[in-house]
Length: 517
Image (cartoon, rainbow, N blue to C red; front, side, top):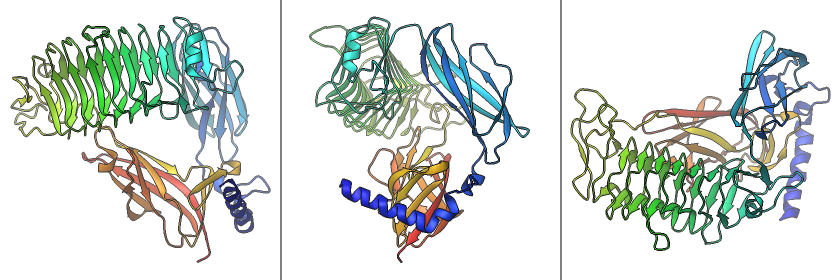
């Protein structure tokens, strides 16, 4: 396999040199393609640091004309630099700063070049606690997450780089720490058909991970004041997020999908007690086999709001077994086999005019155009009803987020296979034989309310529609095969339209070289 890959790379590189080198590989420093690159300001540097630590950042202006620019930096804590420079585009401008208090800060920078302004920002987290690093390339990095947790003390942060992802571990957290992944899409913890993360301490924070392929993904057992936020919890055999005998916790902004159950509140024999006063908010609970969210046995005073609960088989949410006095409002129930079932006494709205929930199977009218249905939505299973059903989904319906996964910008390809970085930050390249790509153009399309498979994803080449991309049995990916002779430079435009008419798009310039007809 390695021999074949090297052979492909060698052949492709030879073709590139023979046929293309004069046009796009510069010998004088004047790059034809770079003349079409937009001017852009980029910030590079650490996104995590400690109070009192001097952090250094690089500010880099990309400009095809090589202009002279001045730079000003707002550090987000009230400190703003004077104008720095002049610098020449392509030259690294370096500035350092120290923050005196813990918190999250947004570095904002502005560059002035030929009378035009260019802006960039970077979010930085500053903590007063000790930071233990996992999976990075620096000294004193741990190779396993559990080892760092074992050495941490209450109040410390364990920061996990995605360099060594995926991490095949089963993790136990029994102290009050902040466990933070570098990027939730690429910092992955995979289970071994067992529980992946068990938390039985108070004041724990976990954010920035994909947790997948376990039995239970995250279990909170007798945990209080814990925050589970901004994670992807997917493809677990039993349950995504499990709470038992745990109160005053926050479960928010997670994507919980493709599990057997999504989020559950339980009563355990090992530590009997209800779950109370938890906030379960702004999660996307999607396509779980049994239920999106469920409660059983005496759970009270929990707030469930702002979630999108969609495409779950059997139930979007089911409440049973003496669970009363819970508040469920401003959620979007979309195309679950049965959107809800409640056998006891709970409140399914937030009063008027705030309203209740959005129900995709609500058939009522809104004659007074106040955004709330004129008749209640009745909850199956008991006597509950949403008195003020919303006529449109709660929250801003943003356009789908679209990204071209393959080809990769600034990378060289051969028939759809990514080979390596291009020199001089050129645009994406593709070589193919007879105009046929062995691998398709791959597109990621994600929407707040619609499944990726329900989006209408279209492909345009230089403004001409080529047809729809096909959903390819992945929760967010579509593909389109580029066939036919296609030597030349193209602008690829991908659009994705949701069921409410919102359209997101992405563009990429690409060279396509076809040899052998």
